Length: 331
Ligand SMILES: C[C@](O)(CO)[C@H](O)COP(=O)(O)OP(=O)(O)OC[C@H]1O[C@@H](n2ccc(N)nc2=O)[C@H](O)[C@@H]1O
Ligand SMILES: Nc1ncnc2c1ncn2[C@@H]1O[C@H](COP(=O)(O)OP(=O)(O)OP(=O)(O)O)[C@@H](O)[C@H]1O
Image 1 (cartoon, protein in one colour):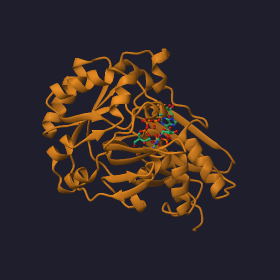
Image 2 (cartoon, rainbow, N blue to C red; image 1 turned 180 degrees about the horizontal axis):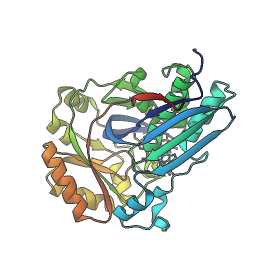
Image 3 (tube, helix red, strand yellow; image 1 turned 45 degrees about the horizontal axis):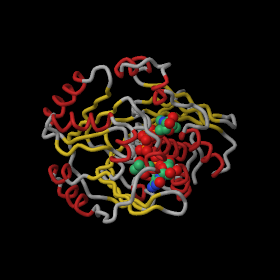
Image 4 (cartoon, helix red, strand yellow; image 1 turned 90 degrees about the horizontal axis):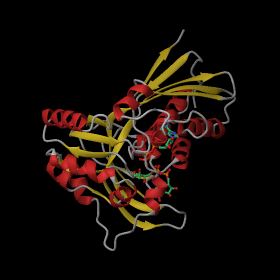
């Protein structure tokens, strides 16, 4: 453990979203979780997080949407106050996973000092894109660096797994840089997948957020489960057709029953000539692989105008976990 960095130091990072290219349910456990076999990739749809130490013993968190809540509400054809837009209201108190991560960090390392954190949101919430989990992992790593603790300290991994099943993925398997990983157990056991390709992916968020617990609660375990091995081979070989058409998400059916707009969006995505369209995580966001960068831009524009206002559509590429951290001084 080194000395903490000066109070004037600010660290910044861009927590990425994730997509589940493959997600099989292996069984329901006694602790209320499911054993899963999933393959995830980080993508370049990112939030922005900055963190500094403070002399107080508290956590100050501010959260706002980029470019603004009003612009996003306008794109989606909703008013920020309406009941259907709970996904726009991101809490800045102890309901926020970043707040809980920093609080857990202070307790775990017995810190007398506090944190000031600014979170700029871009990743849709309740979308199955792991936005809150990624923010929490980023907050833990930034907090570690500011306090002279290695981001690979075993305490960071323990805190991450305690915050949520998806959080460890955003630390990278064994803290190593990763473009794809397999997660098993309830999602906290990670292994690296040697993938170096970058694919063009169209990601679509319909204006609905889904509760992960609710989607799992109505899912059934298949009689015969499928293994992620073929997806891993396809990723390692960089074969976009095999990846796209080898996708599986066992939560897609229960999520579509909860939110019928998912099936409608998926049908439109298939019609626009994307390869292998499916739901990510517990939804509601869907994605499909494009045949080229030009095709991805064309399909994203087409879906945006077809549904305007009503969808958030983004042309994404694979990125990397953990996110890179930059340091500056406000002196
Ligand atoms: C759907 C995925 O995003 C796929 O990567 C994850 O499995 C969900 O991970 P997460 O959002 O971090 O979920 P957690 O916060 O750990 O759990 C929320 C709730 O989802 C259910 N849950 C979650 C993970 C899991 N393997 N089995 C479950 O049954 C449990 O009811 C749990 O109470
Ligand atoms: N930092 C955060 N960013 C976004 N939502 C947050 C955050 N902290 C807490 N939340 C709450 O968590 C819920 C959704 O979180 P998140 O965006 O991670 O869901 P998700 O995309 O379904 O994630 P997952 O893929 O892990 O299931 C929302 O109800 C939101 O209010």
